[in-house]
Image (cartoon, rainbow, N blue to C red):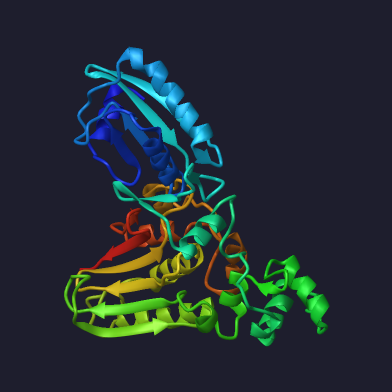
Length: 383
């Protein structure tokens, strides 16, 4: 990193991935900051920088001591111990030490006092809720939400007729056993069961009552009057529940009903065409349902305004994926089990090119990775 890039980063101010420190004078405070980054999505601590982003620098005499403090904090003040990367950047105003903290692999991390921390914007907060700690634990060690077990579930919660039809189609020449023990073993083999419990994917794809077992995972659609998210007037409001294919079909019908038919040929008798190609709806809905973060108990949202359509998915882009990369068709697997099964259950091509096709049809589509709100917002501007 050179001085130009450093100053460009500092000009953006503090947020959930950047923190400024004039100096390090309390190892415990540094430990809390590093733990917060580890438990969120990683980030950088800039030492020798005022809160306003101006550089005061770290003296050459203090660099050695600072390096020891950082090393000791990472090995002695954080559980489990971690490694960070430090870079000394020389500027005309002094040396800035950049401490790069990765997205933690072994979550949840805690400081030496046993406290758990997460970033929230430019600040951090102590994690106290058991549900939040559980989510951190599940998201560590590369765990996947879709293959996680759902407590208090069993074979009795499956729509076996639907599952058998899928299994025969997916694995020609094979059938699911009628015997419970063998059926359990078969479903464990394709990760629809974890031990004696159903996985999240099993409930969402083949459950009898997903809306009861996993009530937060649905689609909420609102057709607003005006252009404001905080608006209180709407033309239509729906909630789509059930399995993911059921949610998908219901939301697709909602969008098709809203989508205007427009005249594209000057001839009065020429057939009208949808204002927005139906393919765009198909791709956005599948992406929202398959790629969302199922560690977050929240719904996918479809917001229709006078000037735009927003599709909002819980969770940030995974594994350092950027907004531009996502729009260009580059992907990172967040729910590999759902991805492998969605091809046979929804209009999903499995090639990670959905957003790329949307962009080809709607060139001014935008994608915002909102780290503070933990959501990805895809926006289709309307005429």
